[in-house]
Length: 365
Image (cartoon, rainbow, N blue to C red; front, side, top):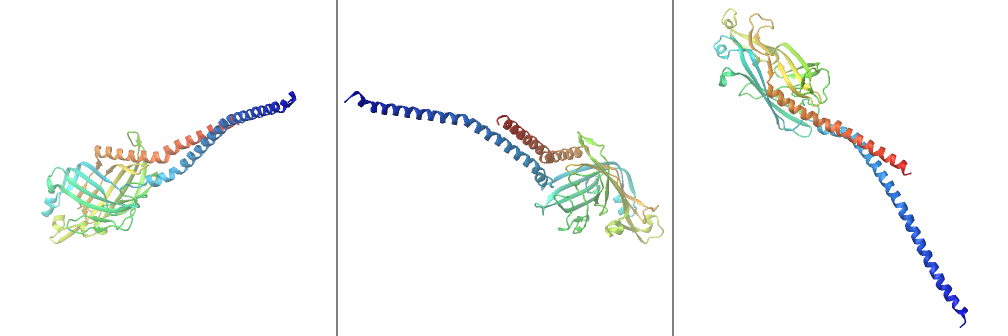
């Protein structure tokens, strides 16, 4: 074997070494390329995620107010509310003297008006039934003798509008031992619409059993920083003897009324009132009420022989107003969070995320 016989082997070894070195170099170059592109890909993915999250936030912000309004702007199914009004100088028909055939009116009588409202059946996703037990008493006379009047009103309402529905029919019970009578009605009664406007609304009066307009007056009153809308309704005089019937009349000997003779003579009950209502406008919740009801027995509205049955200036007491204001504020804040605050936060967040994503995309392009 000559010295040249070893050259192929050496060449093969060299060739192998070169190939290996080239492979290693190629592998190193690939890893370097991979390592250099991975951060860019990750950045692009991050930018896409920011923009996607921002777009999602804006979409939710746009849709949430409508959805939240449908869920939050509904009358609750667990109403249990007691309101108390007082009047210190009321005129009240003396029940004892009247029963003896001598209708007389007591003056300067302290009076308390209690209304207890509860949710009753049927109540479901679309309607709620409210029952209001009303009791008016003179606080200077204990027990049953101090009772001036009482009634139970029952009505089913659309939970979104607060307006009465015809089925089941609204009813009113005013005479113990008798079944309640149907009292069809229109208009608001126990609450105002959500997002109450500065306008007039049809408002049902339980004494008159009629619906009349209640008109916006002003927004001057605040309770702990919560602005209230003031509405006023004026009714009458109305002849309840004609509109309601026998339950709104009183028959006594003519001489008892100052008329000649002793033949039975029937006087009709007349009614007039001025009602002031203060409402939290977002929730439509009633916060305060003042009323000046006047009922009198007479032949005509201006009868000089009229006998006052009841006249007073009643208003919610401080505790009632404070409790109703707290309830109204809670309802208002819940609605605002669902329809205004959270959507605004989401809109700002979405805009910020998209803006950040676009800035980073330009920087890394």
